[in-house]
Length: 365
Image 1 (cartoon, rainbow, N blue to C red):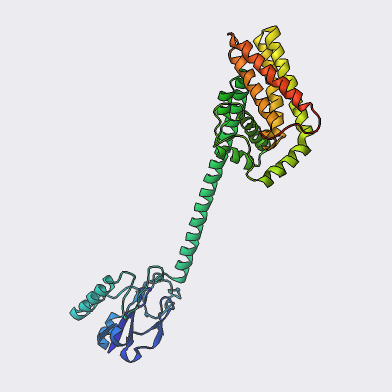
Image 2 (cartoon, rainbow, N blue to C red):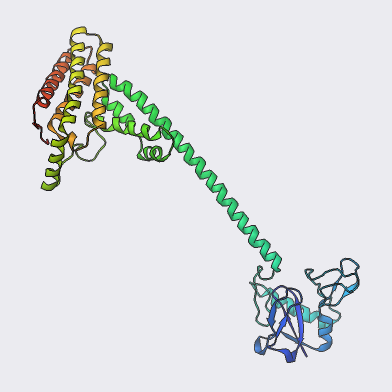
């Protein structure tokens, strides 16, 4: 009696029954296999059937029969070790039944060949060269996908940065025109660009992008103290949360007050010049030019001060004078213009008088 079983590579093998449990080598894939034994053994056949069931192959070069275990054609010396053998055709009824039984057992397996309990996947049935090719091909495919997604990500990021750059430039250009016209709320709304765009500019690494983001943030921060509808939660002015924090802030305010005082005096002088142009000349273009100078001096103060410094009494007086100048510009053609100009003048004179005092006459509001 002989045992018929199959290697995971697809090669049928026939060994004598007395070799059940022994280790043999597949002549096709050179894999070491244990011959099925016990209940898991393969199909037992007669010796005559084993001879007829053995696989055979024909040399593709000389077309002569080659022994099943040969890896080289003895007639023309062609290497045959990678050529898959062909199953011999059944020669009689018993052999056809044996072939049908082998086919049925194979079809019941979802992972590959099942003879004598052996199971393998499509990958394990490949030759060593085939498995290497699959691994290399898979690696190349994954690498190509990575490169494609990387290029797509860089392209998207570049497009987002360019979009943020254009939007910020456009907001600053249009916003400064609105500031000249006294439309501070409209300018502030323009400056409220989404935070992710500002962050993209700051982190782009391109020359000028960080400065552009800082310029837009400066104008939005400055106008939030002037407009009636600021896009912040709670008050825009800083408040201490403890006595220790208050004492630390006061120490800083006293030390930095000389520089702060000079910035306020510059704004007061520019604002009083704008009031004078509005009252005496009565020509709106000259007035608007002076208002622009006042706003730019105010933005320089915003750029050089902290939120603690901007919580002082004098700073609120300053922002109220700017709001009055903007209102005078918006009401240029009616009687309220004079009222607004007088209000701006009173705030500016009070500011100048207070910051002109020695020592530290200021306080947190």
